Length: 299
Image (cartoon, rainbow, N blue to C red):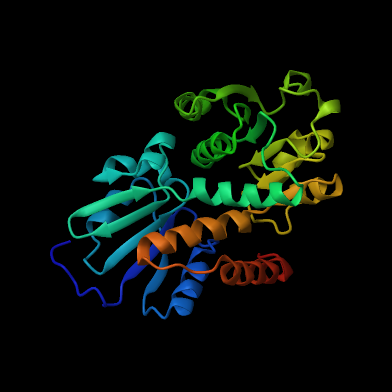
């Protein structure tokens, strides 16, 4: 990055990750640019933790922003010049703002999930969740979920994970947020949950899954999904098997599309300085996943 470019020039943005071919971010950002009348481009690039440093070095001044997905949200941290407090607190960056000589990291996953959870809670007539929550998974997205839950007023969380050793960074995030976090194996008996399975408070519990939906369905008893707010951050497969069970049990649900759209709205705001309506992006994303779900299996 060597020189300034005119403020009205076309800018470049992209999503990076591995795998990244499934990402709906290009659709969402291009839809936003069309709505805002911006002659910007947004592409997808297969980038790993090993190739990320070289990719960043190779960007010219026309680049304005990057969206990051797995496995880059933590790997990017030492490559940045500055990081916003929220992203620093959860040690996860999903947005990089680029300017000549500077890379700035932000996290819109937290605000995106927070907005989506509040919307779902309002549908149950709830303004505050119960004091406890369940998060399934322990990666960067789970860390962002802890921050969103903390802002909702949750004070303790059961973190259910495949590998107890890998949960340590997310456990530290919970400590910094002032949360009481218990790390449990996925198959731990539910009698050790913060509430008895038979007495989950109606409309008060929050469950967030960051693992494949089929896994979450296997490990989360239907009683736990009753009368709760249940979020599945994944949107493949569509519709979510986990959320189908939750809806059958009378729960309000947050889809991976809801989260993706709300965090994308925040990314567009950071990258362009302009606001786009979430409804426009939600419509485009849901249409895309319906088309994908109707396609015959590959291979």
